[in-house]
Length: 344
Ligand SMILES: [Zn+2]
Ligand SMILES: [Zn+2]
Image (cartoon, helix red, strand yellow):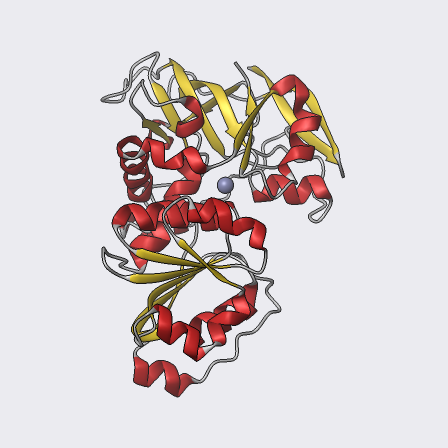
């Protein structure tokens, strides 16, 4: 089947290609894509920081079902609005069977013959197995449905940290991911403090009901942390930016029994130096988190549907797919939280 896909061919250049993709009509759900967000991997390849050309990106999708497989999956109908996840999960491997399907052994799809590498969501159409399709209510706007994937990633970290109402929480980094953390945590009833060296990020995060506190460096100021947390330290800390420097600050500001979530990707060569006895005595947990499980996706949909207006603070810009070049350029602007390409 032929689809229109947006392919990055070299640094700062994106082209619309007509691509021939195999569609297993009898076993896959066909989805006409409405919107697809430009996330970090797309931005990295486009900027030239990760030169893997040609690259067919896109993994934050919303769309409507246009065809169903012969064996019609329960609860899916033609015309339904859906969020689509492009991560494959086999359902059979040990990780999948333990509910850790974000670690599926067969996660990375094999290279498809004649089609550029990448998840391939930047297209007008996609065919996927039914388990990768998640229905959302028809009244949910496509630009909200396209947030399901990133919100699910954030929800996973928050869940792993066991953050609850009344917790005093620090979010390090006020970019798009910091902002999403702040929306979800304040919605939960946490008292949220943002730390980011860039004061331009403070305003949007404060509009979620969080407090903008200061630079990452100020986390290492015991007097300040004492004042903010009643002398206790932060119950949970989410590190979304500033790498090892942010994590060191998080450890310094952690309460007894604190959970510190390592959300961002960090260069493999960066090592963390930490007093093991400090973690031991204070029962501090360092928690990794990556991507999202199917359960996290269902949680994210619930949160977005129940609290849709809370996501209005995000600066989301839509571009017709014919203006992909301008859209990719704008995605590099940190003031815009999400640029989405519109394939309608
Ligand atoms: Zn993403
Ligand atoms: Zn698996």
